[in-house]
Image 1 (spheres, rainbow, N blue to C red):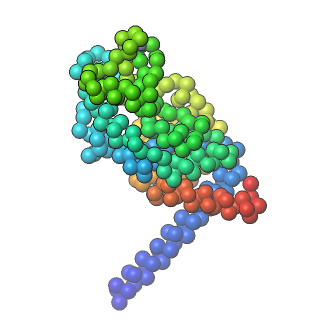
Image 2: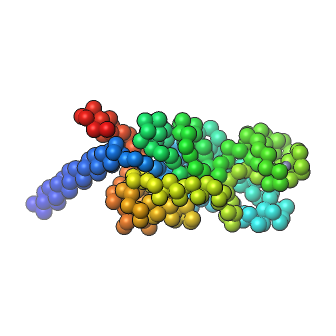
Image 3: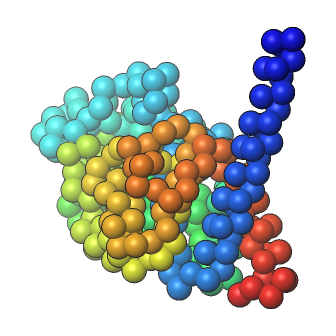
Length: 276
Ligand SMILES: [Zn+2]
């Protein structure tokens, strides 16, 4: 008898959960449809669905390496050697990956004028590969290698190939400066104009979707907080709880691609029913 009771309770709460979920999806769609400035903020979680591992997680590729701080990279040859070994392992893991449903839905919303842009913590370039044009890369991009002295840039594969052949830390053929992937290392400042533009987008947004980010890496994680304080609808879609869940209007602990696709279906339905 007791078993039966439990089964009933479980069934009721499961359908409750589905109903709550459907209501949340509908609310997000309606608010996005009416938004003057929708903004998406993305982290590693959107790219794990493309098969890109979260490098820094326990057991992730980078957990086997010692983190190289930016000052150390500048100061010591051994640090530069460690850095390039670690980044080669990371680059191999995602060089072949392509955008997934989540990236594609966000690119579609930009084309439709529903999203003002994407602020991303990711360095994999998959938003651009999906067709997004207005992308702020807070932590830079691993698709490009640049010279720390003269600023010249190269597509990453060419430099990794050269590195593959001679195993030396790559230097600039023009000025002899150190080459480094155009990503932001620990201890390195975020590009100022990218950060300022991201903050401006957050301040102006009326719907802010924080997607696949644990919202713990600073100063990036303060951007969704800014949006919420300025009155934007804050939606958090992430597998695990985040420190910002309490200030969010809607929290969905669901797979990203599938959730964004559901919102997109609801948006299309809302539009054909006469919404904007
Ligand atoms: Zn140079």
